Amino acid sequence: MSGLLPRNRALHPPALTPEYRSTRLRAPLRPLVALPSTLSEETGPVFGHGMLEPNDSDLIVNFTGTPALGERVIVHGQVRDEDARAIPGALIEIWQANAGGRYRHKNDSYLAPLDPNFGGAGRTLTDDQGRYRFLTVRPGAYPWPNGGNNWRPMHIHFSLFGAGFGQRLITQMYFEGDPLIALCPIAQTVPEGGVDRLVARLDMDTAIPMDALAYRFDIVLRGRDQTMFENCKEGL
Image 1 (tube, helix red, strand yellow):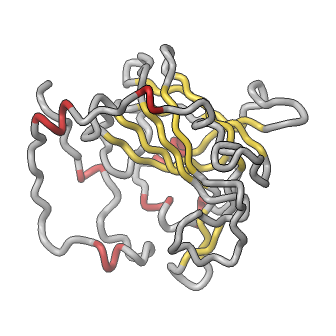
Image 2: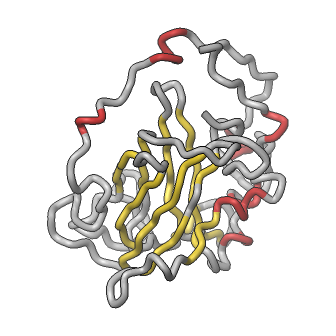
């Protein structure tokens, strides 16, 4: 391995984006220094594939075994590279708010109630065709203290791991048709019209009648059509 691909910061959202108020406190004041990857970061540690449990990809029941409340949805897609080659065996982890827009986190103070049967996290491995599938509930929108009346669109956080934990990509998936996407200061920091590549499309061919709608979110690691990532634009 020749080393992990460096981040091209010129293609990232600017560190200081005044409309996204938190960046005013977090944006670095001095030029950043890029450190080369080491052998341990390039080759490990690796995820033990035998650690997955049967219901890890079913967020509706994987927390307590009792079904969570909310609109049931299937989120699925394919992970591939810039040449449309499937990426098998990739670990995908997701986390999200519940149907009311609240995370199971001690620092989440939103007034919406917690669902005692929803943990809000899941994981799976892509199959030999790079495909993945989660069953979950549609997360609710929630307010955040950015301005006078800012709300985060419905979204699911995605984390992808490559051969080692040093190869990690993080992004967010939005739902087709959500009017809050265009109003969200966080989403609007994404350059190059990349927000559209973060929107999952309604997929009625995969929806289960009288059970769950389906949304397709393909993840492209590099190239012209790549998915926009929060921590590394170039992909794995």
